[in-house]
Length: 204
Image (cartoon, rainbow, N blue to C red; front, side):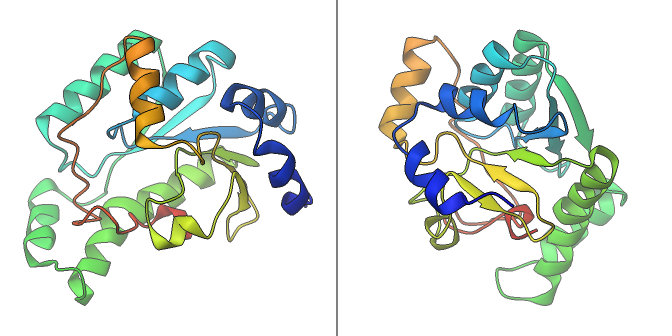
């Protein structure tokens, strides 16, 4: 494994483009995950300039808002993404029933998270076998994410890279404006339920 403590110190002053350019040399087995959330266009646009063919993993819960599906279709077309969609094995009716029963603290919510997000993501990892996993997590989003950095390791030893880790919402808004990119203003993750809660895959 890499000495990520020292590397994180070195990379903190690098641009996201520099971080990605450095990281993609480490392995050809790499993926990007996206939920097509609020600032998803930022990371996807950056990769469109550097590595157009990288597999983009989307674990679609099937319960996204219509605005998110429209946003996803727009970006998939705009960037000609190498998109790989992983959906729950349950029916939409079963998923809706689980969601209706779920709350933040109950076992039903953990089951719901497993069905719509965690199992599909594990399936994606089994198929793609990544050594490098690019994400768009940032500091100040959740308590868990505050404990991470640009580089971290998953439980399975996958190197997770968050090129925009230290960027603020204002920085990302400015990026979107300068690059004439859309913002998914109405994004809502049914697994999180609340904004400062983890969706689950980053605990993997």
